[in-house]
Image (cartoon, rainbow, N blue to C red; front, side):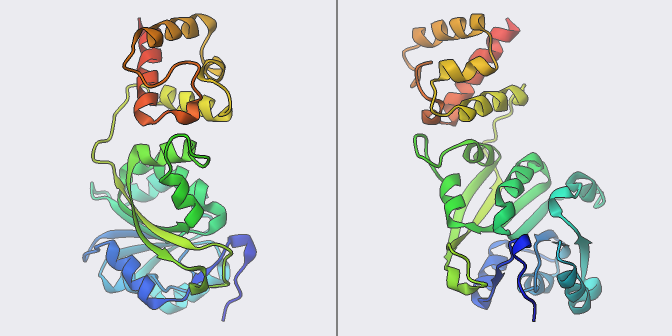
Length: 272
């Protein structure tokens, strides 16, 4: 009926059993606020509607937008255009409530990372997020320090969300068939969320580290700290034998706890 458009990264899910499992995993109730990104042919849309949830669909393909209008009519609120350019905060304020949103999406492969960054930016408006993503991206989000695919996206996503892998979805269950398998994950607001006084500084530290991931912390931190700060930092780290890193370590070997320690030391230097 529709030919998938490569420019939109479209791969339509064909398996109705998987679609049932995805929507069921969201544990929706009547009246819940749900956003669906990339509604496509509506295989998830129709199942979300049956739960009684209040559904907003984001779709960029004009042809599919018309199909969704004809198929679901007033049962959905349709936002036509690029979801990455939508003002999520403004859309959330329309609800005029403290209740959070559940997001469900079969993410187009070509916007997976930008979507994850936008979810992190707006983490406080979501109650639960169910995403179908490439297997390689799930492996990146689940990776550990020192792994080749461990990086900024790993730390950014896991800083705000608890991640749970729900199921694998083989490539042959999509049309057109992608080159890689997919994985459905759940992201929920982190129960042990760490509130930092200067979160901007924290992300500056991590950004500097992974911009120069093959260099030592001493060299990486020179992008955001002056010589006097690095000298003082080196002295403090060397004096603390309980730390698992030094300024001669590569940043890619540090876990979140290490980065928070580093943030606290730098923040303390600047506030003293």
